[in-house]
Image 1 (tube, rainbow, N blue to C red):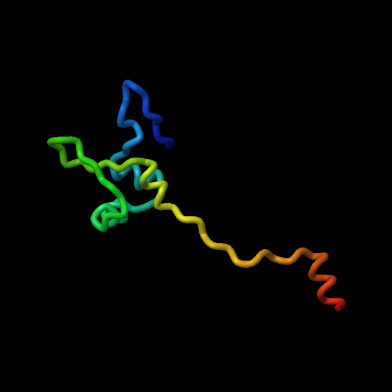
Image 2 (spheres, one colour):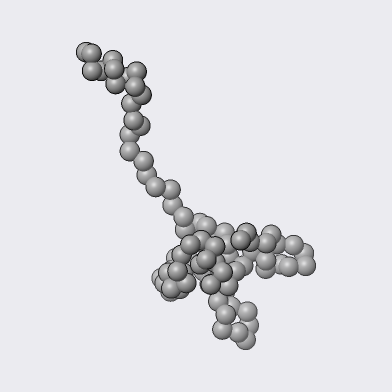
Length: 84
């Protein structure tokens, strides 16, 4: 399920309700609510409703790359090192 892009007729198409955003990013709705409560993720409400929405880009900004270790030596380097 891909988010719709914002268009002039759908100005907030880059916002998703929490259940949809949670499913899209494979997170729990509770996790998103915790991030909102902790101030890590801005949440939005349409006036007069209880439904919480989040921006797709705000949730995506929470994703962090996993640090990698030193590169693995190639077979040629391992053979050279072993024969030394």
